[in-house]
Image (cartoon, rainbow, N blue to C red; front, side, top):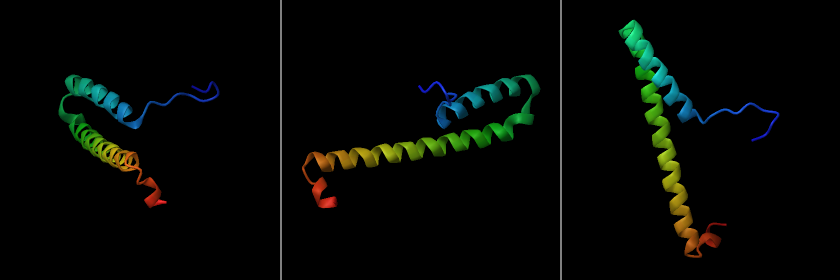
Length: 74
């Protein structure tokens, strides 16, 4: 980790932390925070879906290149 910059956790981790904090606020204050909780929850699912698709694409590429066919792409 570079010493001149502040560490920022990945966005997925930050949203998960925010959801925990919002859950606490919901317990304290009631339903006033539910819309924001639902918005963050939906964003988290979308980011996870994109990450899953990216991982599947990477796996497909690695399987293709393992067969020696990567040169066909270049």
